[in-house]
Length: 145
Image 1: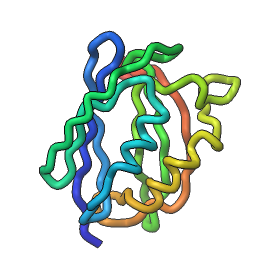
Image 2: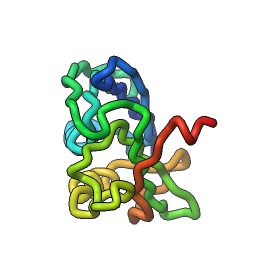
Image 3: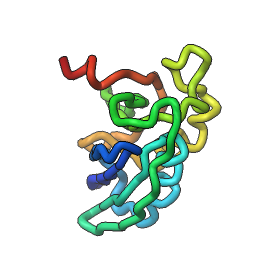
């Protein structure tokens, strides 16, 4: 199966910028449901995305929340059909989508993203994502030390 890159550019309430990327099924003619599912999980605003070189500008406003800056990142991992995985990164995750421990995502909050990832996201070799294996929030400042 052919793959292509989808790049998403985020902006948080403090003006910090982050770019995330995933391999997606080619051609991904209609990425809006995937972008919408990502945005629903984040306080950061998606500014633009590009797939197969075509840029779409959204300029969504970032929101204020418990995790409203790029230091906190949600990492959602899916296993692929081959022994491998894909990571979906969600900067500044919305606290309402987390469990009481504020570390793990609430599985119900991920239902919309799960459908989009299992339909559209592959690894670099074109192996489809098959099941979510983890969904946690971590602090990038600790990760980068």
